[in-house]
Image 1: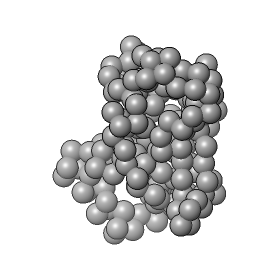
Image 2: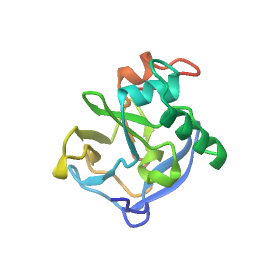
Image 3: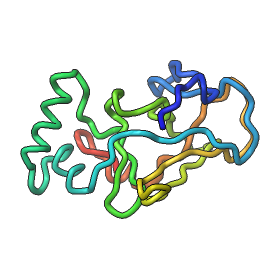
Image 4: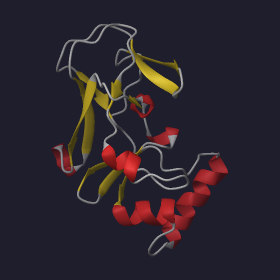
Length: 159
């Protein structure tokens, strides 16, 4: 489900040096649910074809790319999150994502990512929980992990 930032107790605003960020609108205790990472579910094949032009680029992939271009949605791959196996959540398209797409990286995170390739109902799930108490006004940040930085080159998709 897609919950608004305000309903989840978060504010979206500029984050110095990071673009937009998500900030705690209220204090949170350790282990508290922050929110679910919502987006289009895609396979590794779809991710590779759509973002990297690798493998078979099917007609459906070309239509997906064209739909984004027509709506002014970028095709950068900067919001792709792997949930296990060859399953990914792509939160780049605001029409299919929520406020968690604004959670930024930090080497000293205050939230952690949890994932299930098959959650309730068989659908993948990615969500965030607090690692420690978080004060109101603090930016909510997690560690993107080594794969993000090592697999990402300019013009490629972070995975």
